[in-house]
Length: 100
Image (cartoon, rainbow, N blue to C red):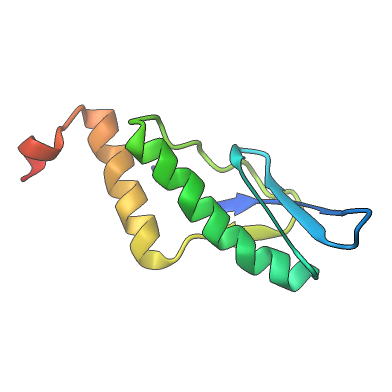
């Protein structure tokens, strides 16, 4: 993956006051928080969990789209490295055993 692992998010205020966070490129990652700042913190954990599901199911990691002025969530460096390695192994059809 040549793109940086930073995903744009959508923020929506819910009727009960919480802020819902969704990822246009990773529909499985949904979370919320009482404020925008809290929701964005929770979004990082939700994104990590959703991408972990992609890896567990041996699915391709979605490429982040352009943010276009939207808020973004970046993966922590170690998680980003693991996701990039997984994506490269998948693209080259390298198994866990072959890598070892």
